[in-house]
Length: 240
Image 1 (cartoon, rainbow, N blue to C red):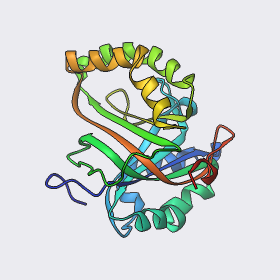
Image 2 (cartoon, rainbow, N blue to C red):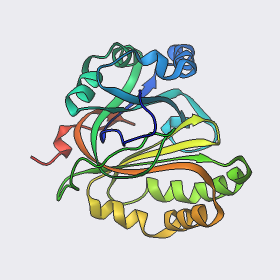
Image 3 (cartoon, helix red, strand yellow):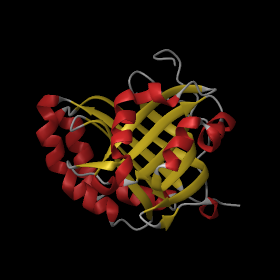
């Protein structure tokens, strides 16, 4: 897997799993192994195995039964093959009560994740869903200030019109956090991003230097499959 240099191709995958209680020890072992447990998938450029807040949310209390995988690939075909048939993905699904997957093309990307950058490889869709990933490495001296802004932002996100799905993810408790959200349209996403608690939190983050590294990316979903909290996430959401 490459780091630094030219941006990686802007194809990404997110897998989310809510695991059976009996499989929590297995999930913690997977989390400890990190990307090494995903194998040598063709086209894989970068990957992280991510924990989540309780019920897949954003709080400080960990959700030991919820776990995600986020990865960059060379091509959309390789990304889809990983979702469909990679041994690691199959192992997760075999232990899951609920899961969903999304294959994505970046329409814009700024910042980096562990030195990796994404290149935009798709245009913003004129109709249908869009997705957003925000990821940050929080400076330890700024952690309390960052988390002080979090509850209002999370509550607003969960209730925002047009938000189809939102999950909280993390590489490490408190300091390495990410949010993935899926929206029914660009307009719905922008209405949330540019107003209210989220806008105030973003302004505070820049003004006070909360982050030592960050990534912000918008995506066009290529494929959707599964369910989360009982709500289906499938191809019917995509424009035809």
